[in-house]
Image 1: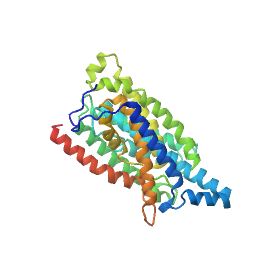
Image 2: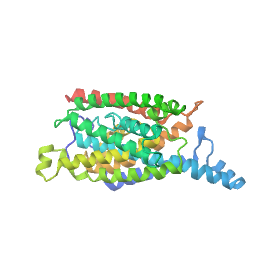
Image 3: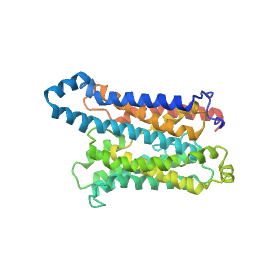
Image 4: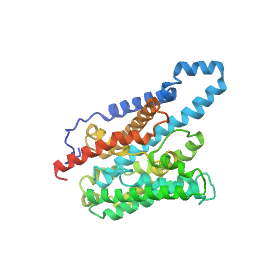
Length: 343
């Protein structure tokens, strides 16, 4: 069994893999069904939908298939993507604070998508926007690994991520203000805070294949992540090509996170919170953490999106606001724990 890292203060509470993954899968299914039947302020529950189906089947089909289903599937897949990406980045960099938002990957994906979408860089091709997000994430992740160097010191990585985040957010706002569309500037809040509202089946068709490619690449690193807990030299001595592992991780994050952010905007801290909550239950083994984080991220995002719909506000709250309110205190707690453990 892999030894718990120094920053982990809680004792291992390992659960059998089948039990843990089965429980998470059931939770995801329950939340997904709830998401399909819960509308704004709780309106549109099962009874309401049954009544609509009896009175107007076409309205029922549009509401369930074209409005609720895309939102539910996107919440599930984007949450899974962010949870899985966070687990891989933390294992690869051996850094408890690594996750797509903190390291600037998400903000860079939004920048890439904005440039392609609002300036017609790719001539209006259907895949242009998600591929722009992929390119933004790829550049940011590669730059981060280069800046971190071989040591990948936590402070260096976090400072580099903060800088990339600030630069990408500023350039996104600038690009939207300079875009030829008169309505582009109004989209700044969407791209910076993220939302699942008004997403359609077309968004799913474009995003899901790219996220699927990313998941495959990210899962392909699982054996190497276990070896990396012993250090890069030990992993290399066990026969792992670390350069190839890093390239697969970069490409995996680029495809998965880039496609997700290009569809829903930036959603923060999911990749930080989920792996840390689940790590004690998998015995601190990165290989076992990957599928658990994928399911845990999906569950957290579905629950947050349901919460957004139930909160009584004049305009629907952005999903990134909810995840930031959850993740920011968690981030500060981790910093405090790391400081006490001497990291």
